[in-house]
Length: 269
Image (cartoon, rainbow, N blue to C red):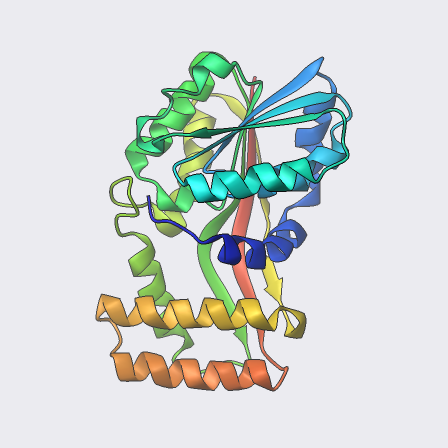
């Protein structure tokens, strides 16, 4: 799996938390609050952002099993969990190869599977295994912040559509799980759960970045320019010229970026 740094995950966390759809989050935490104990398996957990997004709204005793292949991120997740004063919260970390999913997950008997900003990185086969596991175990899934491929820039630049198209092409490359679904992941997830006769809640969860997110915007734009040039759909000179113009807008405090994401929760009927 393509790794992400602790610094990057911490930088994006406020935008992630602000973007999570409140209606979907409330449905998920409401479900957990009806259980005797919440046991959550969080896939590709990173530093534990999903724990921090949900834990305060969960009123029952909760055990989180965080699964990731990056031990540095899991170490940070443990450090973050130790800072909490919630007596009902138990966070356990597991270093696993998620290519082998659901191996290593079933034994913990979760009553919810979560994942965030991950499913656009996996293959169609991997996503099918997730839905099959949920169907066989009769367990709900909460998949937050799946990238949709939609990006809206203000002010507009003539090269925006080409850069976004190149970035979206790159998103469908192999991220460690085979050819990635990229922007098609949310649609495919909803379709698969529909076929499995799960009740599906599907809502927008867009990043809305403004002048308060200048550092995140700079990192995001730089990454997009780099991967766009890698695809060959734009030249490196074109990508860097676009980046220069976009960064000038950020530095001037006028840059706004809406990045499309979706939150999906699926429950057995």
